[in-house]
Image 1: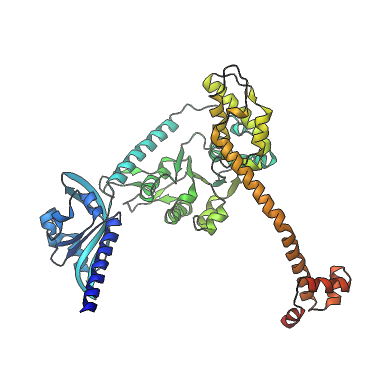
Image 2: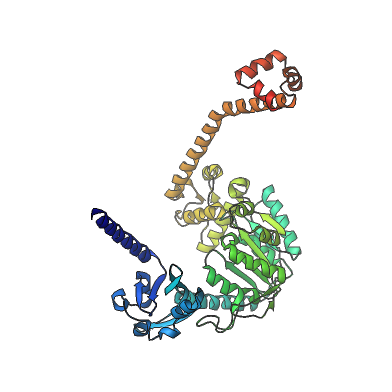
Length: 482
């Protein structure tokens, strides 16, 4: 009796746990039995359809939605005994029209089909977002195409700095502008990747054609795919015949910003376009030729991205025909003074100021700082200080810096000091390990013969014997190995 009660309690706990799991999922889950009666309707379904579970549980699909059991997608999943994925459905619940993408599955008891269930995602908001994004992109293309052409000037002069590391990459960018291959620009956030990309575009033979930028990190995959490849009417509810960005770019440049944030699935589709030089709109079977140049950026080392499976290796080889690496500001501190002067000049023009520059004391602090935010951080600091400086002051000083900068500066100094301290304390141990490895390699080379190993190392035999004992090197083990 006690055992039976325990089993009942355990079953109740199991059912309660299952209900908690179903109600914590963001996708709507609806399950029906063989007669089409609803017996699972989770909280996400309540939000999606504006109905309460108590209003639908135990009722048929016809009673709730006006759908005959024999024509419902659940019935089809049961009858065909297979999943039906990516089905687009419209529901009118409580006066609200919603568009759902549903994956539908048969429900089994052993080998017997006893019902069906669906997992639904609301595409209404994504569809609205896609419509707005496509509209904005069209407006951008219109402005690009209707800009009055300017006389071409050397855009690379707008990149401030004279450090050898920077000048090397600027030279690569000049070569990229002269050629028409794919370019990958790599650099940490805030290093000025887009300035390089814009300069390459404006100095290239495609400069009078559209320049279409897209931030791959800012959009969900479903929306990004629609934006890039376009849609045909009927691809999903509300879809229209719309050109994607590959088509809109025409003979110009498509700029894929933060490529490494794109899913591997989307990267595979981009690779196909680069290989075939054609695209296929969503919902269409027709291949459309494309002729735009693709320039991309990543905010991490592409080899690290490949190792971490955030960048396809085959796509990297396609996109990085010319690879430009913009060094972080901490590796080109000789450019800091020139950058400060350029940002001060911008602020003077923007805010009607008359600031001469920064003080030597502030420059000294800047030269010691680690700059995790790179050039963007420096620009923000200068602009912030320019708006706080008194009217009679001519130079930006340390006291004009915002409080958070000093917190960051202090923490950076502490981290550097601690790292240096750790390295100094570990140095004797590292030297000991290196010495032991060198001796062991020599002994292995001469199969444990101390005299030959000593001659090879250029030391007396007695000294080598002393070090073997001191470093606890097992000679017998070395000899046995050989």
